[in-house]
Length: 129
Image: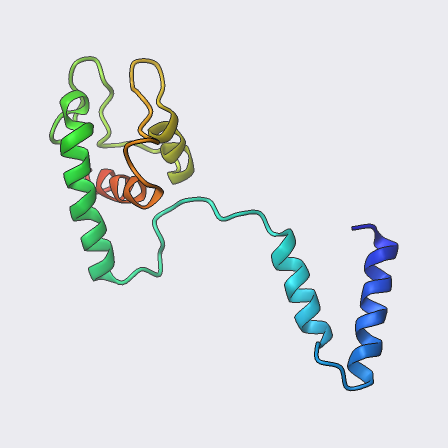
């Protein structure tokens, strides 16, 4: 949105607010900021309760055992020329991309796991220190 259009929109909202309209400038600005904000990057939420995180790690361990352990080892130490995941320092977003799309001999798992399941796999991998 151009600067002129934004100024015009703000002026219109101020006019409505002054005349007893339904919206406040703060609501408009908040809505505009939210509309322009990029989508959140997948990561383990820091505000999750400990029971939610424990549940996520548990289910992630099950998914890991089913799809990842045969190459990365049951302890994440790496087998069959697959890298160790124990000291993985990739961001959650990069790890999500890797799991979804795969790389080299590793297949992508986008059709097998939902975003929430992939998030739980990452939560589990983070425990493999």
